[in-house]
Length: 132
Image (cartoon, rainbow, N blue to C red; front, side, top):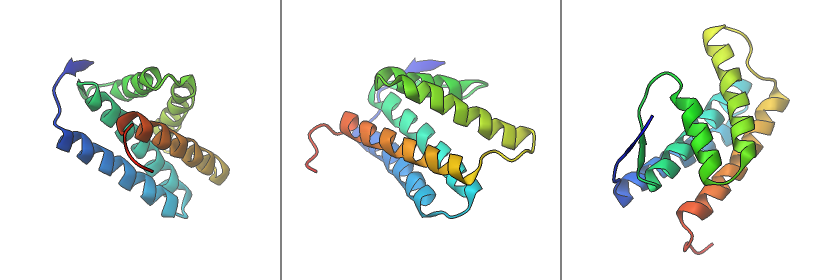
């Protein structure tokens, strides 16, 4: 699922910037689906960044989102990421593949708040010497 790979600081920063951008899009959105999709995408991109920081590159194949969610949960030592992240993944898959409504406005906002906390944890993990 993961392979060892040495990422440059610039590559890691680029991944991080994309995660932050997606989260900001989710924060600015009013539509439920946009909030949810960009929140989920931000979470995955945070996971990719954390993995890159640990010299791990995910191989894209069936089930790799599960592995990304589990890996970030393990690295950040936060079991909630695995639980809520996989809940988000299943809702996303239901909406994408089964054509159903994925989440309510209340759920979308809950997920957005949750990923905002992950973003903060990841920022501290990735940039421990950053001045606030």
